[in-house]
Amino acid sequence: MSPAAVAPPPDFTAVVQEYQPLLRRVCRLYCPDLADRQDLFQEVVLQLWRAWPKYQPQAEAKLSTWLYRVALNVAISSLRQRTRRPRSARLDDEDTPRHLPQPDASVTYEPEELAALYRAIDRLSDVDKAFVLLYLEERTYEEMADILGITQNNVRVKMHRVQDKLRQLLTRSV
Amino acid sequence: MELDDLRRNWQQAAGSDTTAPLDSEAVARLLKQSSRSSVAEMLRNAWQELVFTVLLLAIAIFGWLQAEKLETQLMMGWWILLGVVSIGSYHRHLITGLKGMKDAGATVHDQLTQQLQQLREVLRQSYLSSMWSIPISLGVPMGFTLVKLAQEMTVNKKMVLIFWLTVVFYGVVGYVAFLGMRWFAKHYLQRLYGQHLDRLEGLLRELEA
Image (cartoon, rainbow over all chains, first blue to last red; front, side):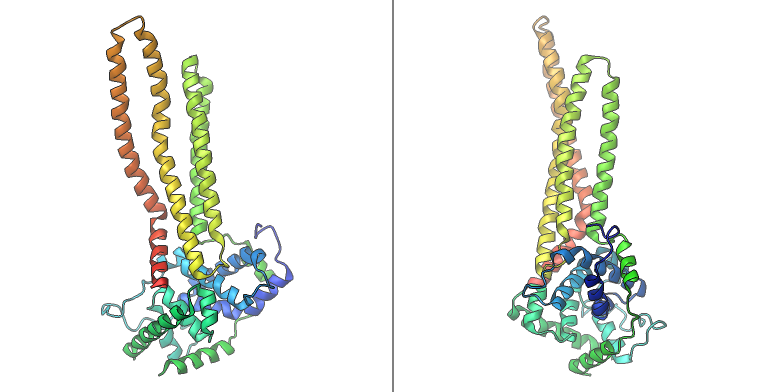
């Protein structure tokens, strides 16, 4: 199916419209830079469209679960973004600036707490970011396991580690 | 501030999202853009490679048509035939493999695993086909030359030495070409796909840890 040749059906358009905020939140978490974020959003929509024929609404998977999967898969495996984005920092990396400039400060206003959260998240690895996103989005462990493809126990263990890491990063940035 | 408070802030910010809604035209416009994913990049590389090799084959076919000697025609004909079969098979595997890496609806773990397996298979095929190009390129002219020398040996015994010198010559050239191609294939594949492969392996390790 060529995306350029076929007009999207109304149900697909409706899904993109309805879940646009969710998709944008994923993009925001992975891309501090506005141009990168727009590119990522476009890529996510494109991959959603390509995966759309395979989506089975009657299957057990909820639509939001499927959307998180596609968006995270695109965000995590995107090579282009990575080359434009600063590398993730290690917790003990003292050379990394603790106060990165607030992304898009002139475009969107973010309260300081939220901006600090984004700065801390930006220093996590792409896999850890996925855990943080699902935590912030209040997904259950069951859903997280379904999105990430690992066991609930593994999710629980990793989630604790990621939360600790995030807490340390937030404490350091204060 | 506790993580739960930050989560509440995040939820509030998400609730007051002021992003302009997308209309159907805007969605259609988004879909008209070409993909910039790493898989799409690799597919573009594969198509560029294919165009380049087809051009080389076209030049070879032109040379074959221009050849006057029957022996040269036969040799080039074999070379072109083997080239078409091996290049066609390689690109079919490469492009099918890369196209199979597009299932974005799988779980993150499955998608990473699938991409990694298919990328490894693509690399294996690419490496094998590069290495097979040596016996194909040298084997055909060597075969023709040795058959001709063997025929001449029946009337001129001095040709025995030349026959064995030719065997040694092709052996040495083949070995040097093998070493050169191995070095080139490894570096070329590493440059094209290595970064993506390392990244996928790292992501999967981290997810499974």
